[in-house]
Length: 255
Image 1 (cartoon, rainbow, N blue to C red):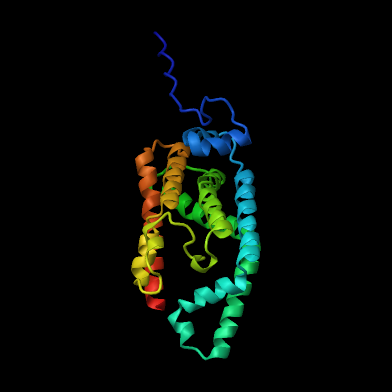
Image 2 (image 1 turned 60 degrees about the vertical axis):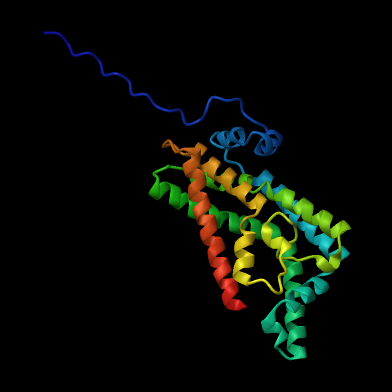
């Protein structure tokens, strides 16, 4: 009686892709020139603290420059001039609101590294559950967080442009809510434009859309189940535009 042949081995996809390990400087640079390499390398090493540190340094530097070149009191005053509710308050209440806003901008700006990490955790958690429960992507949370933080690196371009605007531009025309002309809303009059339209158009921001594409790519490349990059980008884009739509609706109600 012949013995049955041994079962054929099941082909598996290696968890760590076969590409040379990248150093941290290489991962940072490749986000801008070859993002698939960075996000593939996250499968080998899900460390995220280096891009978080770089983003934090740029953010604090921006707020230091704001304080020196314009001043938070002036920024807050300019913001309140565009707020119809504040303008209807008595003068003493307007002053209290303006002072509170200035203090919030100042201390919130210097605490921005904590806010970056906090929002990164929230975004990573939302996308982690979306990809794992809806698409069965089987992505580890550590990788999800690394994808989000690395995906935010193009925001450095916006921060650098904002710093140049503050350093060499007209302080009177500076708007904290929309400091750089990378979206259509920047070129509209904030005081006379519908707040819903203004916030909605600000979502069509070149840098923000760049970030959406990178994060979508990162999730697709880190999924154990095969997910196309187009699907990954679409999932992230849906969440992004839902968030912006909600922000536009809230701005309209406040106005």
